[in-house]
Image (tube, rainbow, N blue to C red):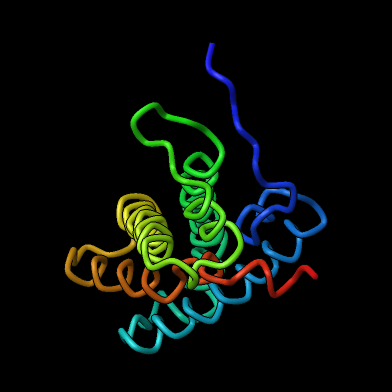
Length: 170
């Protein structure tokens, strides 16, 4: 049986997604951002009509967009957590790299690339969830559904993954 090496005693900021009471702050923050993006999409893509006003569109979509967005953020954070926590044989990260991913991404260019990859994975999941589920029955026009889903994915990608944890600890 392989040993699990746990170098990190202070968790990186993206890992805090999983812990209360920080999870409540994260959920509220995501809800506010998702709300603003849904409203922006409504006006940007002229989604209003006789059956679909802003209030109806917002009420119908905010909860699925919010839940799927948070799920996608967790997928990206879980990827980072697994990379810095466990030894996968050939994919064991050097301590300097796992430390950079966890505490100061900008101290190592490869850490930034790995975090950007995790952000991209989350963004792709946000897009897929919204395209395949949230807006599937709302837009007959697949191009419009694609544009709305892509806009939401890009504007709500988890940029907080790049925040250096060292800013929050002494």
